[in-house]
Amino acid sequence: MNFDFSDDQKFLREEARKFLSAKCTTAEVRAVLDDETMSHNEAVWQQIVEMGWLGTAIAEEHGGLGLGMLELCVIAEELGRALAPVPFASTVYFFAEALKLAGSDAQKAALLPKVADGSAIGCIAASEGPGAVEAGKLATEYKDGKLSGTKIPVTDGDIATHAVVLARDGAGVSLVLVALDQPGVTRTSIETIEPTRSHAEIVFDGAEGERLGAQGDGETLYNEVMNRAAVLLAFEQTGGASICLEMATDYAKERYAFGRPIGGNQAIKHKLAEMYVKNEVARSNAYYGAWALSTDAAELPEAAAAARIAASEAYWFASKENIQTHGGMGFTWEVDCHLYYRRAKLLAVQAGAPAVWKEKLVRALETRNAA
Image (cartoon, rainbow, N blue to C red):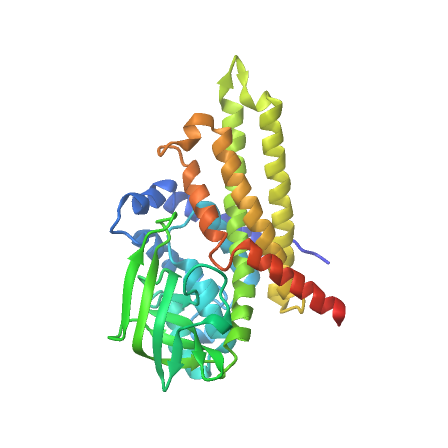
């Protein structure tokens, strides 16, 4: 079994890296961080739209490129390396995947072309506060075509045009598709550790919506969307972790102390070696997840959970040790280390914290072993 990418996919990765290296430097990331009025970098976003990346895994009949999930994984890793301050993940990993998975033909025809051409920005709204999302504890309700309740935090919820909302619906829960530019929706931006990815509180007060998928299937569909998004987020995290290792290694080679590079010190060597090992474990699990995602394999739940856990651990560790390797300079605003630490902390909880995914992994393994 070959878990490597094809030559065409590797070429796509090289071209994506060249593009992002030129158009999405840390200067573009800092522009959002330094300006409280900016939710994302619009210039970078429009260039990504022009590249057609939003439609990578969307069928040609809906205006996409008609490629596949492996190509999307490749792009996700490069976006992670670049710390792209854009609503790509919310729109593509969550919103578009929910539409592809559960949308009717009419819903797909209406919205997937808008995702592909950048005229629609999507998000998923499930959380209602601290803790894991649990269907039995949801307060948001969908009744008679109207949605009422509060979701917080919602990644990119302040700039999204549409949302997929997890809500109570009769005796069960359903996914509800909602346009956010209507009177029954109130949005308030909220502060997080990572301002380059905006978040919001969304209050629904009789907002009109329509089911995405069948009534009562919300929990199952939501979990399937999370499995897909987990793999793509793992590639973003792996990309970010690899940059942290590169930054730390380069600095260890050029920073001299007591007449020798600090990379010659055993403590620094151990840091870099452990970063490398964790990164490779994360990459192996991400590749397994990519295989399961691209083939719609039965192993996707456990592969997604393993990828999510390993990538979250690797990125957090690499971003932390990158700061430590840079010493006193690593804690300063001027050095870029904190940009990766912020993103690592955010991505670790964006689709559920590692503890949630560890529980999912245990359940997936128990289910498989019991079969």
